[in-house]
Image (cartoon, helix red, strand yellow):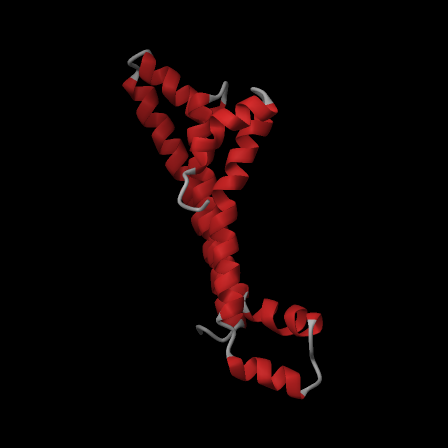
Length: 154
């Protein structure tokens, strides 16, 4: 399912959910789900065996081992997954809006249809600025905090 672009599901989403925002939300969630899932999976799979052995020595087993050792140890990978999910979701939103009834994507398409290249470029800049704001004001500080907390950077 990861290899199928989420926007390909839009016709089915429009049939299932109608022309409202639910179809676009479905596409956004679908766009980000696989990146997040794969990164969390790899984060859990790559927990240092030493941590698992130490936790077992201290009496952790079963779900307690997962919740108190494996998931916290996989937080850096989950953060990478969230960052990728945001990027895929943002792209899916723009693509969904191109085919939908509103938003920046639809305005971009309307401006293109009217040959209003000034507006096309302005919307492209706005889309880029929103992406950069989320990247640098949300994810970069969060990543720095997580990497420092997990001892992966200073």
